[in-house]
Amino acid sequence: MALDRNYKQIQLSGHHITFYFYYYKKRMTTPTEYQQRRERLMAKIGSGTAIFRSAPMAVMHNDVEYIYRQDSDFFYLTGFNEPEAVAVIAPHHEEHKFVLFVQPKDLEKETWTGERTGVEAAKELYDADEAFPINELNEKLPQYLKNADKIYYRLGRDRDFNNTLLQHWQNLLRVYPQAGTGPIAIQDVGTILHPMRLVKSPTELEQMRRAAAISVDAHNYAMKFTKVGQFEYEIQAEIEYMFARHGATPAYPSIVASGANSCILHYIENNRQIQANDLLLIDAGAAYNYYNADITRTFPVSGKFTPEQKIIYDLVLKAQLAAIDQIKPGNPYQQVHDAAVRVLVEGLMDLELLKGDIEEIIKEEKYKPFYMHRTGHWLGLDVHDVGVYQWGENPQNLQPGQVLTVEPGIYINPNIKPVEGQPEVDERWRGIGVRIEDDVLVTAEKHEILTAGVPKLVDELEE
Image (cartoon, rainbow, N blue to C red):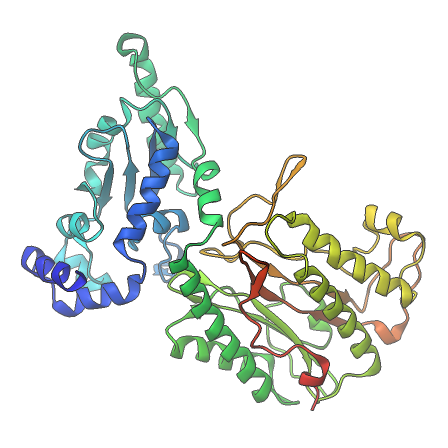
């Protein structure tokens, strides 16, 4: 099927055959799956029209742009990976239920920035019912809005497009009394689409497993490569080289934090020279075909934990294992965090780093000088993926197909100041930072740790 489609498009557009084989290699997800996602969305929006705007090009400096990264919602529904595009999903329209507005072919511009799919090929390759040049958007869009009862759109980063869409809506509101039809409200499409994205399909999980496997290899290599005297950026370079040689990119800026830098949650300078007896915290993950992994490991560079480092490490690992044990269908998401917090607080109390009533400490979050973030987040097309964690007073219960990170930590900053009424921190603990993070899939029975291939037991980390 893919080969036939390639052949037809060569006849239509005159593109080189290598372009189309590359397209299918990179796209990975089948056109059928994108269509199924759109059909599910259409069933939920009924007589509404959903509008999606591609991500804008981001400028690094002057006229140099970052590598383009498509908006995740747009990509989830279309697989289309070019800027200056709009997708319209209008289930009520008699002929055109899925429409793409894209950049037209332009040989001169493509010489500078690479091939464009173009209007004709966009319709065929992406299974659109119709496709138009992006400069015809204002002319064509009203026909897909005028009979809708609601517009589904997420006000985003493109203010000009926000204003364009609002202007179309205002125009339709003005004629509503005469026409008696038209959209009378705008709703954030994320409220409908993001619960869909939260549960991964088998195809998505295949790509997430690939991202995880690449990340596992990179972390394992980094553990073997790291030596006293190296600079943090040397380890970063090796990790990201491993990503690149497997066709992946960094999912986020890699954190390679030695010594007290491990107490900085989002440390990305990566410029310190590693010293003897340092812990090294590496938080790095690969993105493969837009799907992300997210792993953190902390290990002793010299091959042995100091007594204090080992105590803190064991406590964090115990908290992580307790949190992971709560991951199974039907359990509230919050229960994962609560399990980790209780283990951490009990341990910190045993070390006399916290004192008082455990329930009060947890309720008033007096542990926050040592553990100031949540125990994890959803993972998918975005590293901090979309999805609700709590429905008001009601819990978000875990269900098969969801993927979340589990990443408790303890960070004892050299300049830590406990909350009022809590003990001063002895010097021997200061400068120790530990985080352990895995990516966990909720399965029908319980869970699967996608990143289990990176060692984390003390005996595995010590030489």
